[in-house]
Image 1 (cartoon, rainbow, N blue to C red):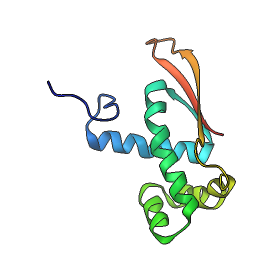
Image 2: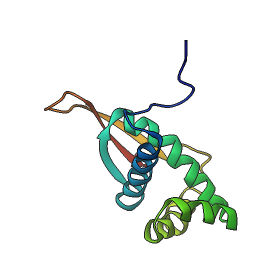
Image 3: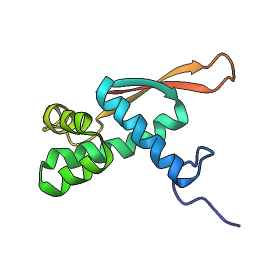
Image 4: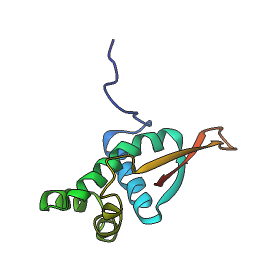
Length: 115
């Protein structure tokens, strides 16, 4: 039987999933907290935490990686404001708070925010 190796598919193909992660990560960087489904929050957390860890290094390779994913405005914010804030922190830059169920389809809702 074929098993899923890692992560949730979120009923999307690879390109749609990648675009979803980019848009969610950009929203979190710009607004510093968003409300989304619990499954999306759990998937975006390791994605964004790896990018914040890369931004903490502040070398050319990590800047190129961040600029390839984010727009100029959000890339500058993650490099200049967010990464220095977590300079002494080893990990755990995001917090997921469960909010209950959405009214129309009973999906689990959560708020994901920067700590």
